[in-house]
Structures are given as structure tokens and as C-alpha cells.
Image 1 (cartoon, rainbow over the protein chains, first blue to last red):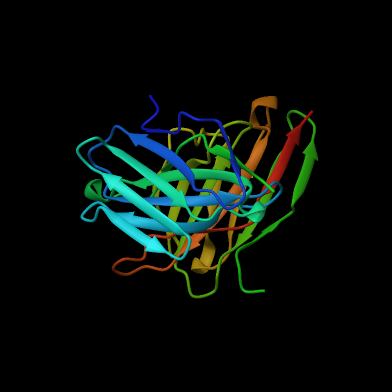
Image 2: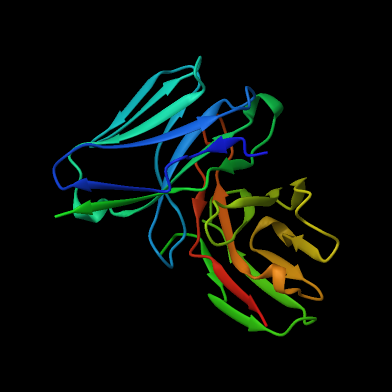
Length: 114
Length: 115
């Protein structure tokens, strides 16, 4: 049973346009959500996060939106740059259950075309 | 470099052999995590330490797997009697404790290939 789902395995976007990566979750015990970026042969790198008590968090070109009623979050990258090409993972923490482990989705491979 | 380090980066072993991986967390972080990632999947949680205490274990962590964190600093993950299904990237992460300290910082991983 996959509790965090990223239904798009890949996404291609022109340089300068907006990239929107989506993530759905099923567990109501998740209280904190994170996005990680991963390049080949490297570990995941933390990008941005959001608490379940908020609906938006912004950091430079990156914005995460959370819709709790729909159990959906999205990562917006504006403008997209070729260096953003990587695999993006959505992750969630079951803080309400007192757990520190992160549950990850399968990832979305973003390709930004120059 | 003050990030999370893992050694070795690559390990090739034959089925049935034992392997041990090491993780050195960011020095001021007292929480340490192990994850496993296979092709086409996201990282899957294995276990978590707060200082030297192992506080969470996934059911993925079979009897052949053991993790330690003596003195609350570096950690080791040992796999006994390796199987081909153990082939994966083993990732270590660390984080500080305290309110709001939810981000985990990952090392580069150890890629295990079991022949």
C-alpha cells in the first residue's frame, strides 16, 4: 500500500516555463511534507518543506502548495532551468504518530529542455 | 566537507557473504537514519537512531540486518548472508533534534551489488 504517490514518472518542460510536480498521499497522520531532488549517483538533496498547518511555502523559484482536503501537494518551479533536471521525490512524516521516518513517493524525473 | 559521508561508495559481494557499511553523520546531528533504495523506487525507511538508541525499525529490516550506533556518533549497517534481493542503494541521513528540525540530510549512499 503506497501512502505517498507520484503518478507522473516523468515530465518535460521548456527552459523558462513553469514545472509543476504533483504528489498525493493517503495517510492522515502525515503532518509534514518535504521535497527532495536527486541527481544520478548522489543522495537526495532537501529542497523545500511544508507543515500540514500551512497551505503554501515559498523559497526563491520553488513553491510548495498543500491541499489537505484533497490530500494533495504540488511543487512549482518558476522559471525552470536546465540545472533543475533531476528526479524529484515527495516525502511525508507521520509526526502525529510520533514517528521520524520519512515515507517517499517513487519520484518524478524532470527534464528541462534548453 | 561537513555533510553526511558513507563508506564504501560501492560494494560488490557474492551471495552468502557478510557486508558492513559505515555512515558518519553531520557532527552536531544526534538523529541518524538508514534507508534503502531500489531501481524505480523512492527511498524506503529501515531504521532510526537518536544518539545511540535505536528507536524505530522497519519490518524491511530482517534478522539478517543489524545496525549499530556506538557512542552516538557514526553508525554501521551489517547484512549477513547476503541475497541477490539485497542489491540496492543504502542511504544514510541525519538530522538535529529539536522543534521544527524535520529535514533529513542524506549522504551519497553505498551501492551494493550481490552476485
